[in-house]
Length: 156
Image (tube, rainbow, N blue to C red; front, side, top):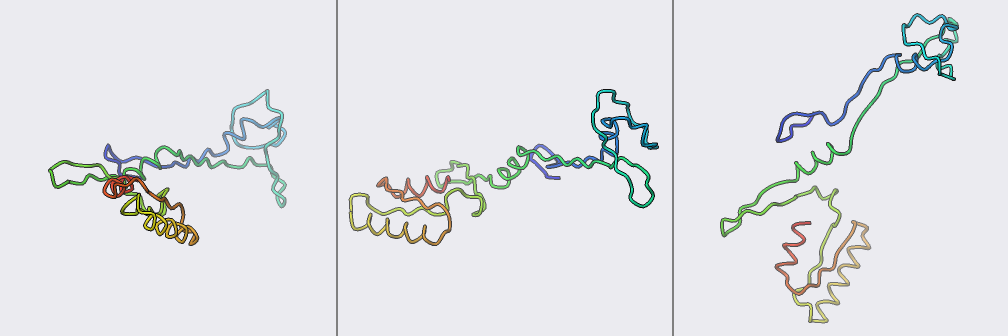
């Protein structure tokens, strides 16, 4: 169960279908002398009963049906990461603060000036070093505006 802003909902469900599904799809179920009362299925082609090796009795196994959709799980992740920040000018910005292990980009290297070849080369080397550690995807942001680069990667 998860407490969404709109209320409590389950993220997954588990249904005990008992022997109904397999029993209704079993061919010649009367041959097995099974005590379960299930719907007859004249179109079935398979015997879905199992024989107990000791008692030699036939039985139809129960079916447990787990059900989990991606949509509610992703919505829960997004809900946990969502926050609003007040800015100095009384505006509000929306931030998606994913946990680091969920973030598609692990680091951004942003040189102060894009037209300074020495800084850009150092930034490239730092990016390569970070990538060699196997931490995940590393971006070289070379737009020339460090403030916008910070803001853009804050949004990621």
